[in-house]
Length: 151
Image (cartoon, rainbow, N blue to C red; front, side):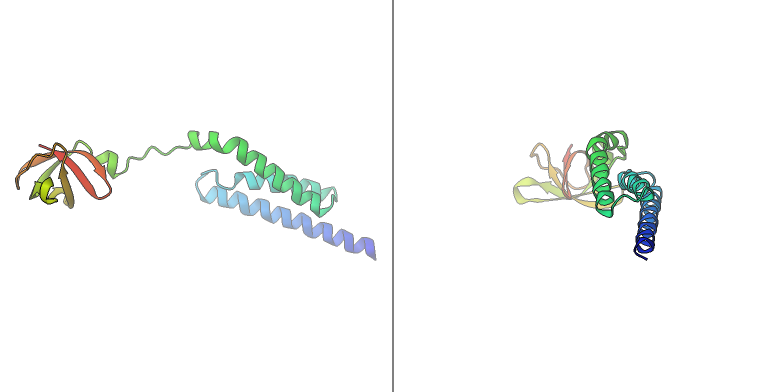
């Protein structure tokens, strides 16, 4: 009777690791191969193999943790470099663009607004000069929600 209980427990562990592997693999697939859970899928695959050979659960867990951690530590930095998304943000897209001054830009009074691509921005003169309303300026840098501009 005891051996039957052990076999049932080993079978449960086998299904548990199989479910974990499938879950981590599906998460990886759904996240468009962003390398988020692949390490855990491999770790659960190793634990699944150990479970098939009826290795005690604590060893399975230890192997899962060690394999996942080693893969994560060794491959994550490389994966991040290879998987870098080079999508420009507003910062890169708007630098060098021309905007229209809709409120005089006066750094001494902390006033100034420009319209860039239909969006109203707070603006500061990059050179410190006064810039009149209806002038056109070029964006030189962005800090937070403030554009630095020059004539």
